[in-house]
Image 1 (spheres, one colour):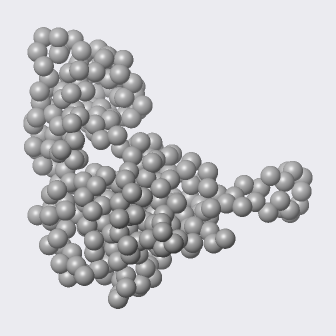
Image 2: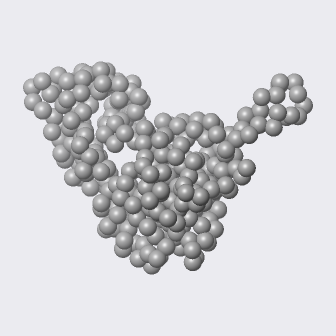
Image 3: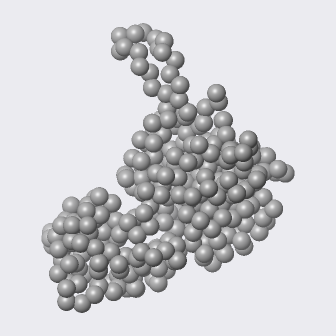
Length: 318
């Protein structure tokens, strides 16, 4: 069974302001926790469209969503094709283009992907280097560590993992692969440890955590896909519709915050004007100025939720 502890479930679904006859999209089906909560609030005429590129998640969701199956449509696709896929679904289109009432992104990697050794996501298990969310995709973590240049490896470790020892780790990887290919997560973990000074390894999280995160993001082009999809989501919202985004690290949250800001009206009046007279127009308004974070009770049940943040924006009516 594809088991996953849903993060910020009530807060995210409440933030979507569900209408019983509305059309909603869960861009990250995963363990179907959010999807089940959304679909359970829908009535006749309501529809949930749920995306995932992981076959295990899609198969498991059929069982978990059995009680609300008449209100659900599953789509096997990366959410970066959100607009394209919604255009194929008549219920999601109004006036010839996608127009839905709410869209949800939960950007956390599902627990089964982390915990199942053969997926190659985890530094806690020795397995073949993979890290693909879509197992039909061509690029794997093994390809990156064995074929990419030292600079390319260093860059992704620094940019996507914020790893300050990225150059040392990349150099150690390139040195090791010149002797024999790097095949497993266990081999990679040892090389990462060798690239980090002993004093730095004694404190903080697991020494391979940041590098594994960076490789996973690179393999799946997670940040590029998210930025593309979030812009599409704004276009696909009906007036009054909402988009809710749960992020798990600063890179995702920065993309979400900056993207939302680009659609929010900005006053251009001189700073000494007592009132705004320019009447700026925007496409979104922020529902919450500061991100919503999990409470103590949720963190006690699910420590993986610690870094999660929820941002919500609403499409303005014109």
